[in-house]
Image 1 (cartoon, rainbow, N blue to C red):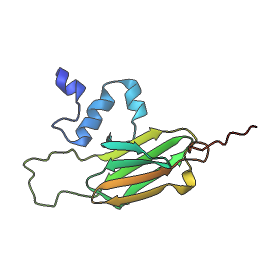
Image 2 (cartoon, rainbow, N blue to C red):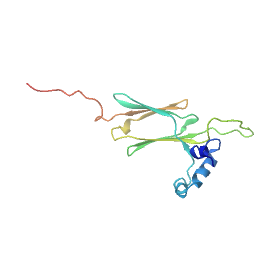
Image 3 (cartoon, rainbow, N blue to C red):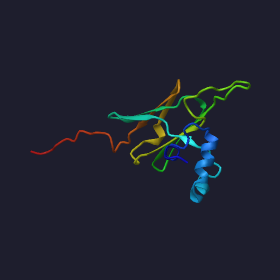
Amino acid sequence: MSLFQHLVPAFGRSAESASRTTASTSKSAESATAGLAPTLRPVYSIRETPDAFDVTVDLPGVAKDGLEITSEDGLLSVVGRRVWRQPAGWTRLHRESVDADYALTLRHDAAIDAERIQAELRDGVLRLSLPKGEALKPRRIPVGGA
């Protein structure tokens, strides 16, 4: 295996063969990835406003029913399953992305109000609004005295 293939194992191969190669490289990797398909980490950005954190995640090829968002124990997880499949009888000449699902896990402190998280998926772009808890919002403190 070349150095390039070792550093970028999925380059030029299907997700299935990349999974087999990655799992066969070590005994511990095999047990850790048993039964799991390979995933891609999507491109994302985070912007802070006074009231919330706005997260934008690029998920091309993911439909609303293929999206799973969970917030538990200080972790925000986004899993996007692609729905596009190659039509029967069609020969692929080139494809710029591999056939793999997306997985993103972001760690946050408990200052996010998980009950008020809002999500919107439009044209392959997921927008999340993570409202800050009351403890994190800026406050004006009155000064008393004589």
